[in-house]
Length: 481
Image (cartoon, rainbow, N blue to C red):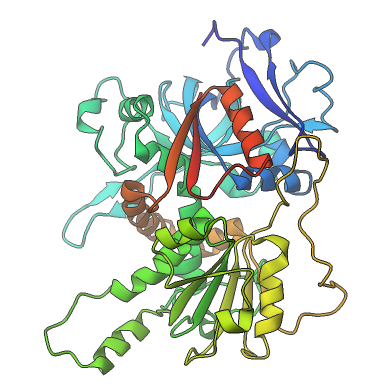
């Protein structure tokens, strides 16, 4: 690490889509002595997606540019933090140095990582290991070791961005031969992670691209829309939004998902569709009423519809997460005919051109109890290299001066997770999420191609691809640094 000239990825905060730079920082070396209770970490794997553009768009409002601030060694003109900044991505960092006994050098952290090869010093607290039940007839085992960043500049950041899962390096017992094919992230060692990164293992790519998306989808399906009334937590941003188990019940509902090719949407739709197969098959000769009762006990939607763009339709269909895939250019009343569904719930994962709102307005007379869940944000159309567009999509057909005729609930992933943990306890929540993720980690998403790049320059080229509209939902962009 001492001989490596570190580089970082920097954005113009206003024109983040078209103005970026890869900046070398030779004066950042040598690194200073590491403070106590700290880790010196360097990014090894990260992923890029349209979500990174959301971080850039909302960064000034939500403090995302403060997570990885411009270092003191940043040269002009990029050292002007009022104009330039850095955002992060999800992936793995390696611990280069440590003054924390529980996290030795050589360990890996999974979480929100900086874009670049500059080592970053963070103060951390080690969370007490969560003891997880293996099964009813076996003892408990230690779950993921987690550290939380407590550096002063990050104390006001949402907790999910300060939480890192640790894969410890143990030189006395770190044999990768026993872990290379291990799909259980809890028991993977640092040596196994190193080997998996070197061979571009699909599980590493899935961790970078899908794991945080799964975390959100799992929480949304298993708690905000849980079929178990004792697990239901408030959906909205506020703790007093009046959300009830009746609101959470998706039994026989029509679920309509916009931006259905987004990774979070596919995972969420898959988790909902799995409710149809949760209970084991009973004996032959079951009557239809028993089948319906079993489905209803699981809060199973009557149908799950993806509303896709023409360009994404083939991928969305190929995921097999949806019962039906329609086009956002279709007539809403023809695409979602009234059937015996008891309700219509629209999940907008960031559909463009306010398509979800336009459809909701068209469908509300047919479904007076329509519920609109505002999950994501669209960050705008693809741009050319000279564009300065930064605003979210808008439609002249909409006005924001009149109340909407249906119930609309915005949500926040960090708040939702906090409520879920409070409801069932840290151990239960972590065990359930880990078990759910282990299944997806093995297989990923049908039709999702992992595209690997290497180096910060490749990251910059990937950023340009997304800005030009060349990034497609059927690809996952992963980078080894």
